[in-house]
Length: 171
Image (cartoon, rainbow, N blue to C red; front, top):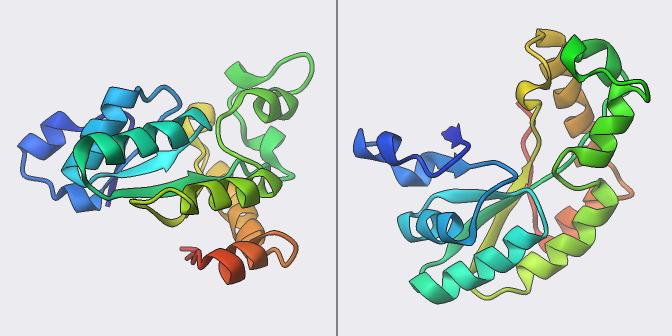
């Protein structure tokens, strides 16, 4: 599939299958989420506001919404893989912990319950991303390792898997 940061009008106009697209980004509007749902594009849930946007989109469009929940994974070696532009006096990792979108593993459990309780919303899985914080291959490998640990975590993800049927794949 292809991940986009806004509704991919040009991608769709070029003939892309909406079922293979995923909409990302922390600034999605309710209208953009509704348009994505109407087209069959999966929406990565990056903030709690987007849960309400999905609920409203299902009502507005009469279509089923496909969603993934974004985990905010914080690899132990994150600091060494970031671009210099993101380093701060408090440490880049602490800044990211406070400001980057996505959810901790602990928060994800409650949000999964909430998403699963919305008729017409299908929670397809979990996601994570590095974004523009680094172009270093090590950053991507680090996030993948942290995501795999989170996905295998007995304490958190076993509940996501057993109680809510969320599956995951680590590539």
